[in-house]
Length: 560
Image 1 (cartoon, rainbow, N blue to C red):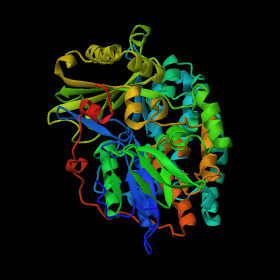
Image 2 (image 1 turned 60 degrees about the vertical axis):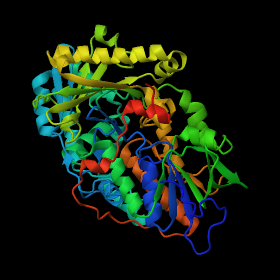
Image 3 (image 1 turned 90 degrees about the horizontal axis):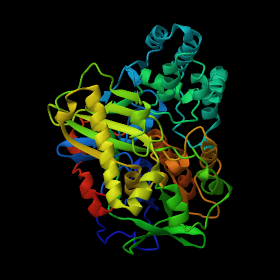
Image 4 (image 1 turned 135 degrees about the vertical axis):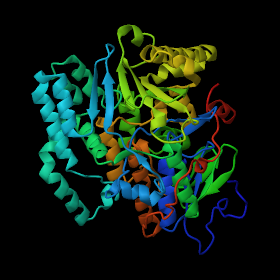
């Protein structure tokens, strides 16, 4: 939406009798969430987004009639009756949408065709695992026993910022946590790779590491149990319309609350006067002013680009000058290969399978960090991802951002050749598994970590920012709880999003809620939130115009 010239956003002074103004940088899920909650709380907001679509990493694009969904694999909060669902209801994210739930979380198959299916039901999972490896019964039963206990616990602390939680709220959390304290402590202190190495069966040793499709490295048992328990409750499903559908729904909610989104508006710097943020300057030189600025974009860009590195502190320095350079601090980047196919997929195949690759295959996967390839039957997740009688596969693997960035910078021709190698590998791999499938391929599209960085600005092409359950997780938690999402010495400014609240869509959305709760204290507003009433059936037309990936190059988003 273009500036109509009648607003007072270009004025340094707020018009008398008008609500305080809040500028939000970035229309990802965190930025849209910030805008929604600020509007509900009585502020006037305006979101500036450098690209043409909302959502950031939570996006999709079209190609020859197919919709390639980039982000959501499962979404915490799809079932009613918990705080995560309340956040999505307030943001209108699930309005009128059906949700697809699967009976299994993931399947892991080795190069010889032997496989493990991680059912969400602990009884079925236990029976399956015992059939595969009776010798591992003690460890199998230990895992499924813990899964049963997690199924009985629902803890989603996404409603109130840590520093603002009341005695009653803290007491409620304690009532949930204390009876299961030893369970939480033990599963949080046991790394998955340590647990997995206890199995005698070599496939189980590898498979447990890949419950989350690929091995994130360093994760303890707790998140695996938590997410499988959520899936068992139908609280980790896939919403109709997918990633961009979710972003569009939240954007629609934001606009219905009176908010304004300005696209193709790249913020060049945050304007500061007397150590107070007073507005922003866009790349085209236009300046906009507000009583508060929230940056919901890449953390490094915010601190060292938009603010020139002038406002840091012990925790920011710890993250960006120490931890950032340690291996494994950032969640890995990914290569995505989308495949549009004529015909339907085998309904008996798992919706998601991690294929463990043999040495020969692994050596031919460009920039791979692990010897595995994930294949997901995306057209089974939601309707509308493929034309009638057609299907979509999404093939991914963790990859080295530096490998792709260096190629793209030094030799664009070689970069494109390596992308074709990915497509050729995927085509050949799929053909070996399902003879004849190669002849059914209509279109293939490859997005690299350099694509992610170019489109979103995310440091290192990471889709989830700091890796959870690492030292960076502890530091980021203190940025939210102790620093109240502010930078030392700078007033009128706060941060939201995965670079301050960690990755995952519900956590990104909750940082918007938290940021507004904090800034309401500063602006003298009462924090308010209520559920969206827009529950009419959702339809694909709400996605709006979808650019094709190769057309984004004209807008600075992707290479050819």
